[in-house]
Image (cartoon, rainbow, N blue to C red; front, side, top):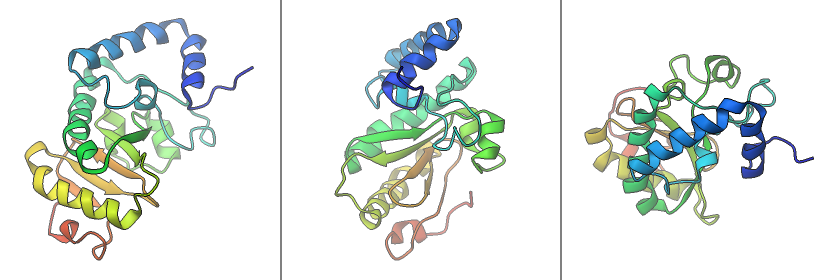
Length: 187
């Protein structure tokens, strides 16, 4: 038996656990296709919850409420128009989170993940190191982030966060990413 995990095979199994999941997933996939955002990242990745979902007793994937879909569409559009041209393809490692999982995963109390505004990403390019990632993404955010109310954050390694909740940035190294050192709203 294939375990339910955050892989594509795990996603297929997860959909089968509850009959309504596949129907809801098809609706969301159709919504993203209408927005021409169905090729930004593999669909199953967009529905990943948190990396430590197992530790928290959560689900590997989650289907956000329909009313939250336009938020993710705006974030995906920015990723497609600004992030991918700057650093290449990305893997989505975390998207929508329900409150209990977000709290256990030590997400912010008002995390953008709770409303499906946010996606956490990692570059596919294994040669892209943290200083170069920060430099490129901070310059991109400085140039295009405010006009779209994009938030940009950095975690350990090459994992980073993009959301369209509000313009801000956090977690950067001012030496590696001087463009982010400019004053900006706090997270």
